[in-house]
Image (tube, rainbow, N blue to C red; front, side):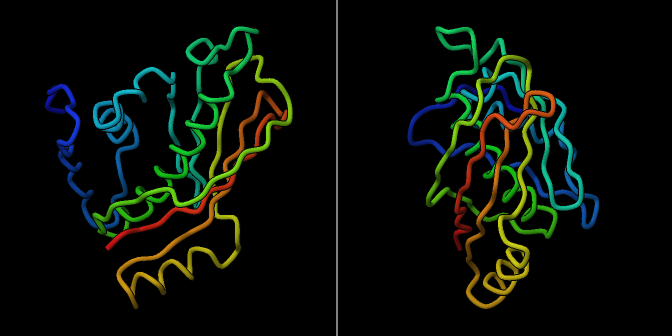
Amino acid sequence: MNGTPRRPGVMHPRLPLPEASDGDDLEGFLAWLREAIPQVAHYGIHSPAWDATTLHWQVALDANLNDKGTGFGGALAAETTLLGWCWTTLWLRARGRAQDVVIAEGQQRFLAPVTTDYHMQCFPLEADGIARLEASLAEKGRGRIKLVQRVYCGDTLCMEAQGSYAVLK
């Protein structure tokens, strides 16, 4: 990483695409992400893992505490949004595509307080979501996918979010 501080209006350099079919070094991607989006360095995210169509990561609660000593809803919402963006970006990168991704729509449901370090997962909402995204990219060079993000403390589902992520031309 270049270590240059971010400035408004200046695009951060893209991370080079991985070699064909190698997939990303997830720790290297996370290091790049912390530099590209400075706020990410404060979230306590670690141990990213990709399992077929699901992206997972672990998060330290102490980096995301609110005044009540539980997980701050704003941080959780930002982390779920980021997780969906990462899922889409990593999925594209694995296919040799360096395209911009933005969230188009999102919603969250807070189900239980986050009281310990937690883990998050992200996966497509619809069974045919990946196939539809692939078809749209092939036809139009752009597309959308709906993703689900879940936050767990142990086995307890504490939050569920959904987002529609747009892949730009």
